[in-house]
Length: 258
Image (cartoon, rainbow, N blue to C red; front, side, top):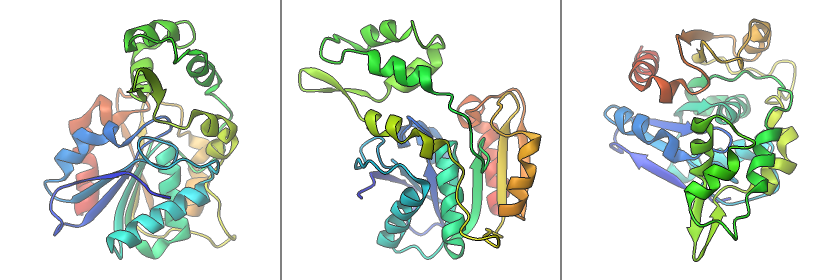
């Protein structure tokens, strides 16, 4: 599995790996990656079935964890700083549980290690409804999506996956695999035994207006990540890094440097 990656910063700095969420890509983190590159060797990755990385029908977190292991082995990293948002946060948690000795510090952005009920049905339906063969522009795609996805910011986020492949449009993401494997994506990271933990420094960041991390998730977090601390970013939703990038970068920099 070849993962597309982009490096920012000096190769003499500590490596920080960033993992995006569902329907995303490393491009979503370009601003943060450039800023963090002042102090770290930042590697932003496209996870399997996203961006310019390889496609595969297996959407499990164990498979994506092994993708990450192969990547950091190829780079020659013994230990990394690891940050993941949403689905990428679950990949990061799975990797820390699978290979705790390879993670120096862990940051999980607005997701908990729990099973979430399906809540992307309308997104999949809207994306599948687009007739890529007849699209003339991104504007046409946006107009068609309005009937199923009313939030303009979400439509623009999704349409970043659309590109021209010759005379026609195509998806960079593997939409079929993501839909068929959605149950695995919604699932929790898997603990291999009752004693499975990542006991390194861990930071969970919650968007105040987001519903992804709830008080009832505290036990699951504490069981798997006993040294976890939490911070709530005020007046932001599920994308705190995009909504308040300066505050977000200050928060994670303080955690990484202390």
